[in-house]
View (cartoon, one colour):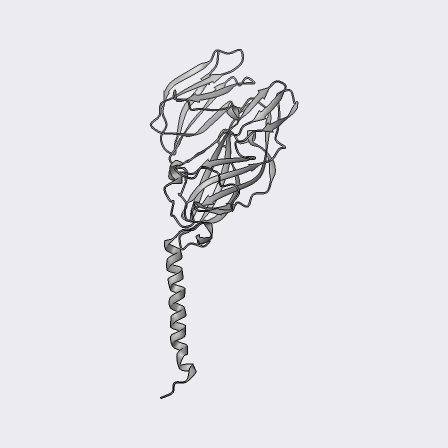
Length: 300
C-alpha cells in the first residue's frame, strides 16, 4: 500500500523535537561561557535598594563624582559560593556585561556629584534600586574625575581619583551584608570612610575610595553627645585589630551616632577635640540592631 507524503509529517516533527531536546540537554551539561547563561532564571525576583552613608573626615564638604552604580547578580548559581569568599572571581569582570559568575544590573541612579560628608550620624541616602533575580554578588561604583572638597577655610580643592581598576570600586556582597527584613526586598548599605579615603599630598588632595557594607539588623550602633561642642571634635572607634571608624558630632547638640559595628567585638571610643583632653571609653560592646548609648561626654 502506498503511503501519502503527509503521513511522514508526525514522525518528522517528533524527530526534530527530539533533536531540539537533545541540543538543550547537551548545552545545559556543558558550560561554554556567558552565552549559556539564562538571562531570566526561574528564581525569586527581589527589589534591591542601595543606601549610602559615611564615616566623616575633617572637612566642610566632600563631593564625590558618582557616575553609575551596579549590582552583579548570579544567574545560574554554578558559582554560587565561590564569590562569597573571593575564591575565583577576582574583579576582572569590568569589560563584560555577563560572565560565568553573573550579570551586571544598573541601578536607577542619576549621575551626580554628591556631598558624602552630609551623610553622617546615621543619615543615609537611597542611591538607587533595581529588580533583580536570585542572589547579589557585588556592588560596583563607577566614579568620575570631578570630585572635590571644601576645607574649613571655605577653600575648594580638586581631588584626584585613584582606584585599582579604571575608576571602578568593587564591594563584595556576603549573605550577612544583605538585609532581607522586608519580604521581596534586599537592602544594602555602604559606608564611605572618608577619613581613610582622602589624603593630602603636598598642596593637593587624592581620594582612594574605602567603602564597606554593613547590615542594620545584625550590626549594632553607638550613640552619645559631647559637651561643649568645639569645632574640630571627632569621635574615633577602634577594635584593637586594625578596624577604625568614627563620627563628627553635630555642631548644635554635639550628638553622634556610629553604625555598622559588629556584635561580639570590644571597642574603644575616643573623643578628640582641639584644646581639650581626649576622653576615652573602653570595653564598649554592641547588640544586633540596637543603639548602645554612651550618654553625655563632658570634655575638659
